[in-house]
Length: 385
Image (tube, rainbow, N blue to C red):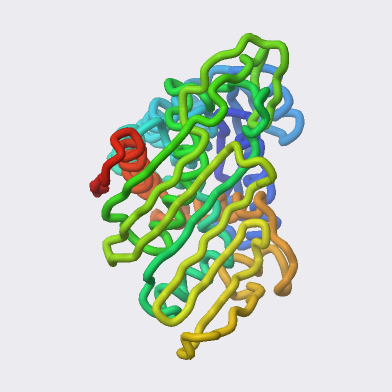
């Protein structure tokens, strides 16, 4: 038996349940993990959600007060899956309490928030993880290795897109995600934050950016109760949407590559249509979330009429072998969060960061702030480190 790691989850919506499942499944896929997560406490402002979590996943205790979690000396690590406006307050408090932190992106409303959490983690000497789950895809890890190894030559340009229809319905409930004070930016923080991390992970630092954004559904009905991510309301009073539904950005990396990033939460017909295409001087590589285990690869020295082939990743690529025995068998979104949980646990056991950390979140938030500034001013904006 490995040593137990007592964990808590703060915020039990969709993502809080995914974190709970990831902890519960970790030993199934990582029997050699140095620590075994033990679900100790769940916290949510909705008492009914707390009771549901305790009954479903076996949390030892439930509370509607998140500070109770930090006062519990037995809790060693905390998942923060609360709304964006609470990320900074809770994230900093978790670190200051000496507990390890797994927090969802974008880590607050602004880059200042993300930097504050990163600084608290560094000062406290605790480990951290951030929910940039798409970098955990074995095919993305394989693409990163190809790019770094020069298999497609020098990167010249790339495209990153994240299209979703979760807010496409005009009666989609006016939840906290659409309010500036609670959600911060809209699709920039929600979906483009993943795109920003993929750009950094695959291509390196972004030097400058110019962007445009728009609110495409300006009013939505107010919910009568707690609103889930995909909730549709009717008959409620209409309220204003305060953050963007769509964003498009043109970026230049420090190496000189040009990158386009486009994201929409109101794209009718697109259900989680996310992907990347990277072009180099001798080839290209592309990945699409909806075909998670595949890469479109073009390599060689023919240049003209050089064929594209489909590569199915398998054991030996990233953590694929932890989940499936052979290429072509699909992994899932939830699997990516199990990988994330495993890397978080590994970092706690070894004292060395593994996977995306709050420092990565701060770097991406700096780019997101620059995108927002450019969309507001219409000008090119340098991205500060």
